[in-house]
Length: 369
Image 1 (spheres, rainbow, N blue to C red):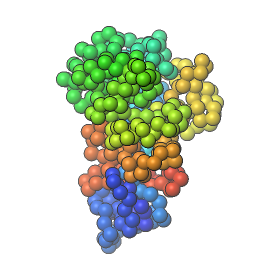
Image 2: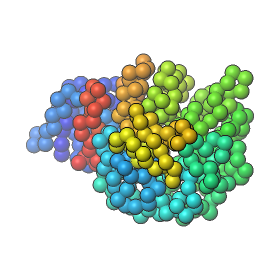
Image 3: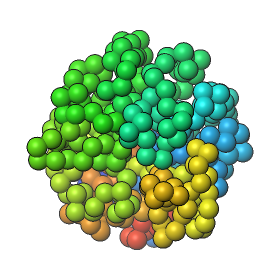
């Protein structure tokens, strides 16, 4: 057993001082009394929380999920530990059916062999999206919703981004909702109107991919999918809090409307944790400069955001309390996925992150080590 002492322990609604976290591979207790004959880890006043969870990330450390190799998955996994992430959804891109299947097969084969942050499964972002809202997804490979593309890999798919207004989307969504209710269906890369979005919630859409981005803008006469998402308390949503994809003045407003349904993501590509320069995303050239990733035509191409930086941005640009901000990368994504992680709770996996007041990551623990 181990005990982390002299930390500020962040739970879902408070910060505990003068307590120790007792754990082995699982969380044993949070207590003021430290057992004898136990390994002591002195946090020296750092913050301690459940490990961060990123449900939307394409790559990091020079590697991408679409590389379809163990080495790339392992590189992403190990690199993410530096950002406080202890588990993530390997996120695919809109590419050819062959390349998508190769990436899915690769995750299926190697997800339990990576040596850093754990792979919880796959976020399938595309190819079932609207060409008019492709963003950095390659429109050449967009296709109509097609269960045959993913059926061999359904065991690892946890979240699917889809434009509900495209042809065959309704039957696809309703089929998955009925046959695979644990898969989260997410509205994204969509030009859906307010009414179309509301109708899709009835079919089974329960989440929204990078809110505001890849959607029609909120307009006072046509509030679109954004308005429908913000209005509905049952729909969770994710944001890229890099102060680039959305204006930081929105952070308070979104949180007031969504509360614990708000999740922070990075949507990071292979340039995450790397230097500025030229990279590749989904077969397209990306220029990274000044913490911004763009295609040649200027379209935003994912991000190079780190999840600890997203926390820092929320902390600096909103009046949301720290425990609530941390929950956006811990308990909220865990609850969305229906997993017993994301909390410092007895019996839960000892996935733990230590960080300082500037949100620099000091240490991460995967299942206690």
